[in-house]
Length: 311
Ligand code: 3HC
Image 1 (cartoon, rainbow, N blue to C red):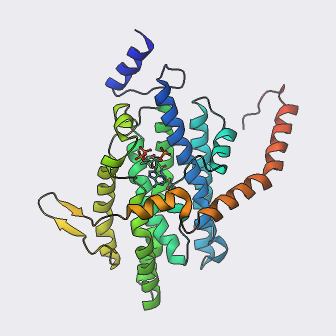
Image 2: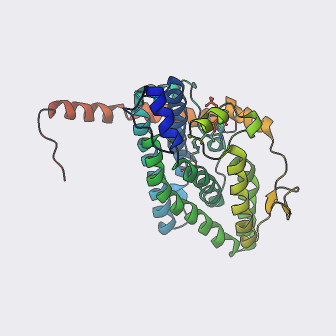
Image 3: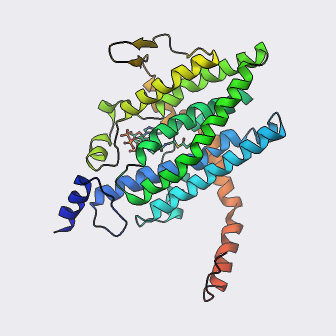
């Protein structure tokens, strides 16, 4: 059996492609693109929430938020490791991000204006991420799908703590409930944009679906997220900022109003509220951390001949 024949037979049997398996260049290329941008999103995604660690309303909330932000860092490193199995270095990927040649999720270009935003991010952003990432646990590329299994376990804690923040606020004072509503108003539509353009406008969906990278379409995942989230908003007593939102008894789905794709592409192309700050902060953190990388490399070089101690 030739490489291409074996590749196709593994896909046909819903199997996993492993790093040493033959794979089409395009498969490798699109996985490096998607996994790297996923990793970039995790790392940049630390900034909006990190902005509130020093301002959390209690030690309890501070501890939870610190743990969540630390998890996101770990997700990023996990995903860079998965990308490296495709023959690309982490430094190359980070350089592509710093030079604006790689994307990260547009959602992270919005500011976190109040503590309620931290609840909305956990509930909506991590909720959307989980919806997408559970699907990716069935991705055909082994290292990526296994990374997703590990990451999804932590994401469910992220989503629940966010929802719990909003539940606390809506049961608080009128001002606190208003703060929660304001956060939902600002984060709802950018969260729907996390699933990407409509299927008809998606660049990669057809090929990614043929390669079992995507197992559900952008619109199908978005619909799954909306159907899951609307009842949660109703339980909170919050109004979803979509006047066209309505229950469709024929399809048993919530029908949403139109997404502002001009806003989506404006933010993706760099003209969002926080794009410049996010990348400047990321570049500075990378530069400020150079000494740590150099020290770790020097230590590894010095001890290269010694057996690795396993704890
Ligand atoms: N933000 C920025 N760019 C986006 C985007 C978004 N929300 N949605 C789509 N795009 C980009 C795509 O990257 C692609 O550009 P490229 O060719 O330069 O990469 C272009 O728009 C066309 O979109 P497609 O639908 O054709 O692209 P994909 O097939 O790659 O689908 C995706 C987009 C659904 C985001 C897919 O890439 C994916 O599933 N990625 C993995 C999940 C991910 O990256 N999630 C980001 C959030 S991670 C997160 O929230 C972590 C949590 O812990 C906080």
